[in-house]
Length: 242
Image 1 (tube, helix red, strand yellow):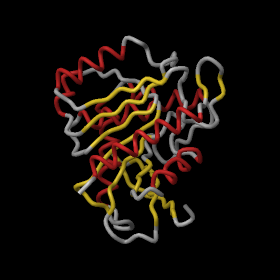
Image 2 (cartoon, rainbow, N blue to C red):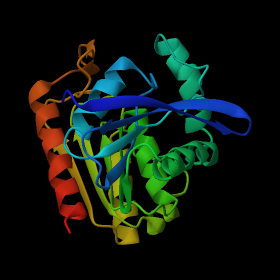
Image 3 (cartoon, one colour):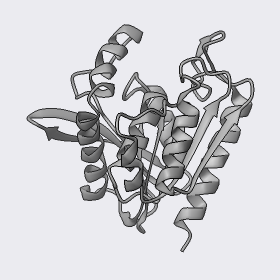
């Protein structure tokens, strides 16, 4: 993974500067599939960059999306909640920022991206963001949510989803209300989406976050995290096969 490079991508949305991260193997010059990664509520962080680097090392160009703005880098839960909630409460604004990240992934000229092979994935709040981007009809081959919320204000938008959907859920996650699961399944079925929801027994919220240590609420689980990432990579291999 030594060749994986992280570069800042600065752009504007409505006059405000955003700074996402472009993560890619600099030794590869041929076009690769492009992935938008929506981080958890802490936004662009060292932990998010490590995940992006790990995924990029498998042969992808990853755009780690800045959804808050260049000047907003939460340092604690209170700051993260203050940055996140306006987006959770305004899905149109959330989608505008996710679409901007997808546009940046495709328009940047540093790493070559195969525009016919695009996907999105996200963690916690970022899982919600990835699913919402798919619901806009964005040209994504697949979208993957890790321990994310599944609700949407407009379930009928599920019909816009163009690719496959994979939800990786902790069965003991208290932060994703259980009633969201059957509602999500109904949304996907009504829309005729190719979807999978995997519920990992004994897993809590943030099971992929190595720093999560809030017993009974948010807990890192290496075994489950490894299985979840393996599931995502299996699906990416499937949807991107030539």
